[in-house]
Image (cartoon, rainbow, N blue to C red; front, side, top):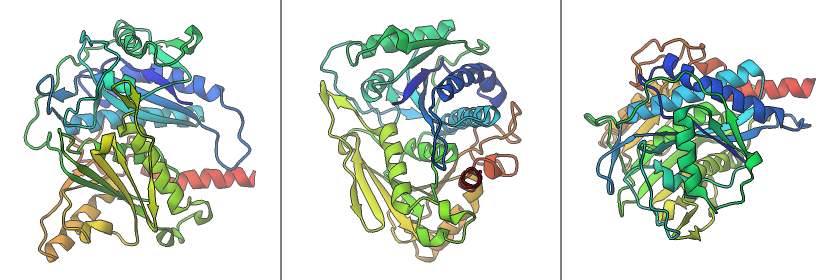
Length: 403
């Protein structure tokens, strides 16, 4: 069962050094505590504890109810910073914890009506507010709160919202020390240009072997671009490299089968996007429709369709389906985005918008070499490309087998 860490509001400015000063101490404390509770594993892979890291903040801009917007570049940059810290801590402490980071829209001091027949209200984005988060993420093994004024305040607000939802013992609430108390973001950023745009069809691609933090950042970046305004229907297409294309990879015998990788992607997206209940009733459990080389599921009351499809080349469905709006890439696959649009131009199709998530930084506490939050100006040389990768994970497992 997952545990939950609720961090204080993000610091300002949103740079790697500042985020690390604020968040690394509580993340280190919680990750090491969870790892210490893991029973030794007897299989090739590490046993892993599971952790949800919730980051509350004023991420959305717009009316109290109705369609809102977010600053995509800043949101994905914050996710990249926190996933980088998690990866560095796990590497430094030699531990394995399966951690997922969730952004939660919340304004300091916001109050909620605690009526039991709460009904989910779409806000146009994939980000839940604190109340929707409380109704969609539970129960937890342990709840971790950060011992700062801001950390205790947001945790208390969360406790009010989950009261009566599941049996919670005092021993399950664990306090950890916070990082530096810095200027916290209190207002949402103004959306400029197309940075707040959302789309009906979003596509990403990758191997998604041994799902890791780099994959989670890419998937989360794509989810943030989905148009989830009222009555809208969005499709998230995830191209997953077919088994035949991977047979010559290093440690190919340890590559997970396509169906296993696809289900891991689907489970992660469901945990990130789906609604657990509405109007006091449990939502329909995840129903995955499986066909040859594809998995399909609907999330959030039918407003999101997730399609995991096998790809046998570098293009996948981007050159077989004209109705594609956005392609999300990483620093390693940037050139692939350009190649996709060249192929689409040959067919007379419109170009896909290209969004790029930040590179996960391997260095501890150093600033990115490019401007923060641009999501498109970083090379892959200084990131986790050679350290946090499916190949590196397979190599690690291979060494465990040899030992």
